[in-house]
Length: 29
Image 1: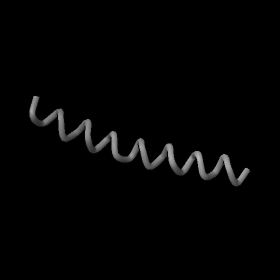
Image 2: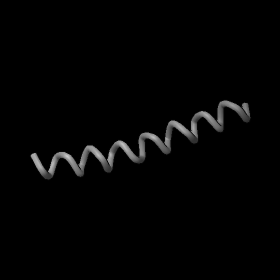
Image 3: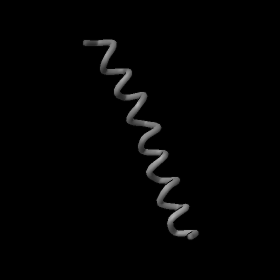
Image 4: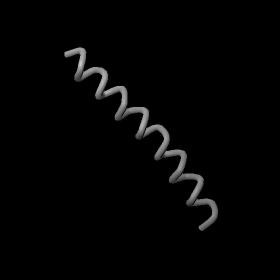
């Protein structure tokens, strides 16, 4: 379970960055 938490956090961080990038791209479009 302890190993799953960091993995989820690692996935959560990129997901947030991707969402921000997608928003910026959408604004540019």
